[in-house]
Length: 123
Image (cartoon, rainbow, N blue to C red; front, side, top):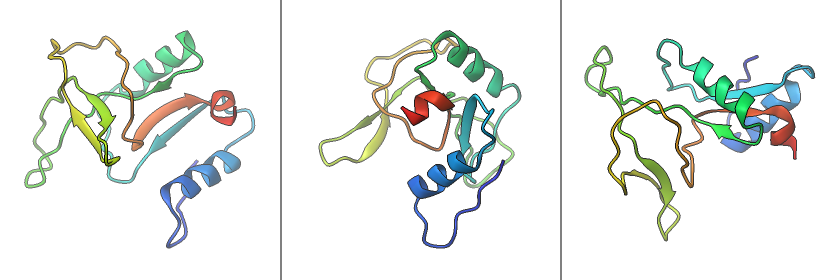
């Protein structure tokens, strides 16, 4: 299901319209912003995590795409999204980690790509 927001509509309004328009029997909502390009098998780990933890907002690791070469692939780093005191959302690596597919907690999310159970969204 694809929702294209009307001109001037904000991100939250577009997401709320998408949830209202999604099929009632949908159990999981997945949000992607238009600049997101997914890699192979990106959805299965999110769905697995949601099945194990029904009240989780699951977000994949984001791999950067260089602005001067869209065909180049760079592996993302294991960091956390967090807010600074002025409420700027930044990505940082407060504790260095060995890259792995193991999920970890983060105090914030970019909001550009994530999956969540529909009933948890509505609570």
